[in-house]
Image 1 (cartoon, helix red, strand yellow):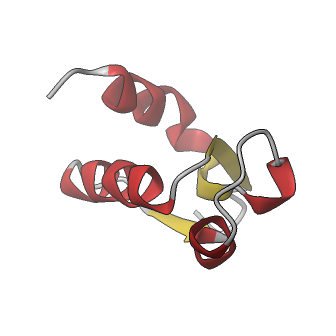
Image 2 (cartoon, one colour):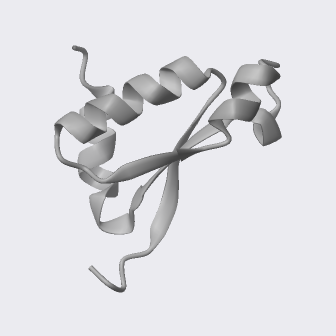
Length: 73
């Protein structure tokens, strides 16, 4: 796990949506973290990629994380 690359899995316009995704991945045991969630909350402007919350995962977890986030409840 020392050489695992960390990547941005997805960007969210809302810090709330980003935290819901993080909670879901945490529940399935996928290590992840958020960045820029405070900026997304302070400046909730659509289509501003620099102000979007980002969720990061290890590259090895991309497939599983995407499957989990696609699931409905």
